[in-house]
Length: 427
Image 1 (cartoon, rainbow, N blue to C red):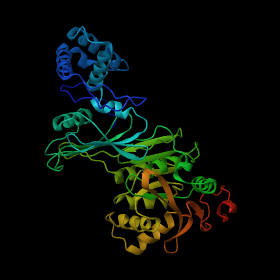
Image 2 (image 1 turned 30 degrees about the vertical axis):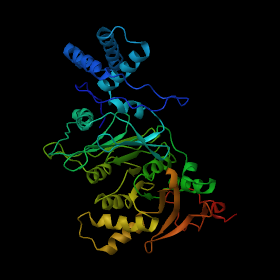
Image 3 (image 1 turned 90 degrees about the vertical axis):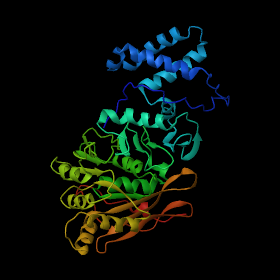
Image 4 (image 1 turned 120 degrees about the vertical axis):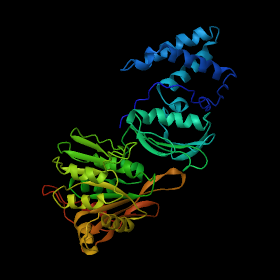
């Protein structure tokens, strides 16, 4: 769902005022700025033709017209104030208003609007309060301009919505009566650059083993809590897949950005305003099997699609990846079994456990620690006879240290065996 913000009426609010470079405070908005911007808005919409603008030059043309109207409304504006107002007007007309400068900050990974007057960002793993001049109607208008082109709506009869911004960021909104203190918006952004394995606390040996596991065709599950870095780690691990292979990604909201040239991306679709037209992740897993994939990458399993994924892993789609919410590697194994039982197929628990043991080769547990640091806590091999987990690497003495040697063979016949030196204990 690629979103292009339409031109809309209404003022979204004042731009946040973060400290300027060098520690100098940004000047406060002039008392007449809001009224001046409102007059420019009205004149722009009265012109009519600007609404029809589209294409790569749209934003530049809108900015040019706004500049002309702003000069016409207030010819004596000082240049600094004129440039600030013009930037704010352009953001409000073509983008997400006061959120635009925040989303332009590459260090911001998440934006959380907790109702009028309460907003936070996650910057470099730490939560920081910010100032947004957004009241409740302005927050709703901001979300509506995102979801309207998608045929979605946000109102009392449909108070939850998920969408994706044009840069791939994921937006989730909930409004009253579900949100007691006013409309809440959460925007999760994803790194434009690949995150190296070393940023997850992996040393050379653990990183080399994970890259070997992907190349050898092991099926790997990445487990962790919310915002632990599961998708980011899954994206990093997928970089080890051979570029010649055909990969099909399946996600509820598209987040993965694989570097390989032969990637087919599938995204689930929620029901429309009438409650029809939904396409679930489970539907897409079944569809992907008809698309001749060499590997499947499922963004997250959280329901009955776990059973379909296990069956796919047992039918020749070696080297697939997925993520699951769990607090540890053993918990992840139990959770996959539980999710598979939600598939609605009358299979005995023993049969589900046998499929899990035969399908999943390794579990990687990632967690978020104090200060926003995300790190791999453990890498474990799945023992098919249980199934149980056996630690290969675990966090101790401030590092991810070897804890055992793998016993499962490579699934790809041309893959070399893992290097024994990766698992040699050293101090």
